[in-house]
Structures are given as structure tokens and as C-alpha cells.
Length: 463
Ligand SMILES: *Cc1c(COP(=O)(O)O)cnc(C)c1O
Image (tube, rainbow, N blue to C red):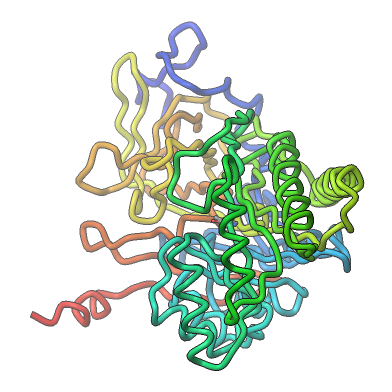
């Protein structure tokens, strides 16, 4: 298609509409390794491959839309976290980012532990052979059934989130004749955003028990008196997609001050602290995430320093990265259906998925990048909005990005960094069939979560 086929595709900075986007990369054919999984490369023929397999072949075999996860990259990232934190710390992968049985096996093999926050996640983890004592159970409203199952199977820890839950878990454990290892989740008064954080005295949110003014200390007091509980530590999780370690520093300082208070009051030094997850990844070339070894070093130093100041033994640290492990390892492959230039505005590119496979843009105003992957193009960049096929004008996958102006129906485009919170938040809106997750490694592709079928939809509809 020639340039004149898209008369409205804005070409120059001075004709671009307002919006949050950066200038197009010098060459749209170049894939930024920051946002793409490790083995993704452009081949000599111009198309893109992952794990040694061309995306055109993947699309043909598995259809679109589909998520492709680079297994070698996933394992490498999991291992990097494990190695960075060493033997004095534990890494719990946050299963809510993306969980399947294959992923559980990879984590197990790479020596990681696992966070779950529902009975469904727990069942998935156990069914793939994750030892129960390497599982932590989270959530602000775990049901009696979930708590009972977690204690029966022997999860390594339950993270208590409210006064009622302290009593509930203690009671269930006691009735099962067990003593359950628990942590208490506290809110430390840190609002963490992508590139900044705010330390506040209080936090207005549903999770955890406030540290300020005493509720957390009272929770510890109660937990220590209950026979069904073995209190092993304090848990804090300050947010998500965080780049600035300063928020963790404030959190660690406040958690350690609680440990000191507990020591002074009860003569007990709680042996563990969990600093949660929330470490950011690169969704676009503007993001500069930290490496696991930098994060491990920074957190270790903060905790050691604060404990020395409070004359406490340094507790064992846990962290809970979800996004930072799985996020960058996958991309979503779509086929372009329509290309609609809007005079003076932007060009709408409709793909065969949308908010049913990636709700993050609609939900959080998340930013993503996108690339033409079935071929190269030397056409000039045009400002696009990549949208889905759902009956909702907020059905946006990539809000502002640049694609070559000769983009046409049938082209394959891919959105990188969709490994976390995309398939796990996928829905059946408009009775969409949730896409498969395909693991690619060393020239082999294997479905790890299959595509939903119309029979799946009808099986649930029993009226
Ligand atoms: C969501 C969550 C995580 C993981 O967050 P990421 O942003 O994926 O790293 C870790 N811990 C807790 C308690 C969470 O709720």
C-alpha cells in the first residue's frame, strides 16, 4: 500500500495530536531487547522469531490471538532472582501474575517458592508438584474452605490480613490439631507509583493491618497468644510496577521498627520479613528496570542497616516478584483486521483480540509497545491506537504507538511484555474464547494452556 492510501496517518511531530507517547524509534524494524523476551529476534527474511521459530509459523499452527512465552527467558529470570537472593532469602513467585502447571514445574525446578491467593491457584500449584511447604497463601478474604485446605495440605505460611482472620486461621488450625506458620501483613504507609513514592502515615486500602498508631502491634500481641498459630514474621507489599527503591527503604524501616517493638514487648525476635513484590519491568523503551542482583543488594543493605541500628538479628528476607519474572517473557500475537485512518487524529488498528486478553490498558491506563512482526517495512511511521474487537470504545490494547504506514489487514503485530496479568486477567467478554499460552524453547513450541473452545463456553451454560 502506498503512502497516499493513508492520507490521515500523521507523519511528522508538528502534526501529531496531543497524547502521551514518545517519538517513533529511528527504525521501527528494530526490536528493543528491553521490552522483548530474550530469544526474540528478527530473522533474515524480515519476520520475527522466538525460541528459533518464526511467528508466521506459530500463527499458522496455533492461531491468533495467542500468547507466546519464551521458556528459556522465564527460567533465566527465575534463576537470576534465585541466585541474586542466595541462601539467606526466599523468592516467592506471585502466581497471580500468570500460573499454569508448566510454570509451576519451571519454578520448582529453578528453586523458587510460590505465592497463591485462592483455592484455584493452590490446587494448580499442588497438582503440578509444588511442595506445599514452599507455598504461601495470601488474600484479604480467604474462605473457610480455602484456609482449611491450605492448613490440611501443609502450606509453608499463611499471610494474615485482618483481626478476624487471625482468629479464624487459629481456630481452624487448632481444630485440625495443627500449628500453622503465619505472617501478619501490615500496611506501612507507602504509596508506590511507577517512578515515585509517597510516604504517608496511613494507608487507605483493603489489604493488611495498619502499622501506624498500633493496630499491627496489637495483631502481633493476639497472634502470639493463640495456640493454633506460629508467628514467623511480618509481611509488607507496597505496590506494583515500582522502579524506585526508596519506597522499599521506608517500608523496611517501618517493618523493622515493628520487629524491635515486638522484641521489647514480648522478648521475641520474629525470624522473617517479607518485603513483597511490585518490581517494575520495561513495557516501553522509556522504562529502565533494575536487575535482580541490584534489588537484592539494595534490600539486603537496607534491612541489615536498620536491624543493626535496632540491635536486632537480621531476619530472613522474602520477596515476591510476579511481573518481574514472567512479564517480559511473553508477547501477544495478533492479526490485523482493519486499519482505519482518522483525519488529523490517529490511525485505529483493529486486531482479533482486545480487552478480553489484555485488560490492563483499560483498567490501569497501562502503556505497551507494539511491532509489525510478520515482515519489515520501510514505510514512514504512523501514529496508531491498537484496539480490539469488543463492543466497548475503551477496548484499547496499545494507546499510542507507531507502526509503519503501509500496515495492512493480514499483517501480524505483536505486543511485548504481556506475560503478567494478561492471560491471568483474561475474560470471556462478548463470549471471546480465551487465547492459548504456547511455550517456545529451542525450536519447539508446545501449548501449555489451550485455547478455549465454543464447547467450553457451552459446557458452563447449563440453562
Ligand atoms: C501482586 C502481589 C505480588 C506481586 O506483584 P508484582 O507486581 O507482580 O511483582 C507480590 N505480593 C503480593 C502480596 C501481591 O499482592
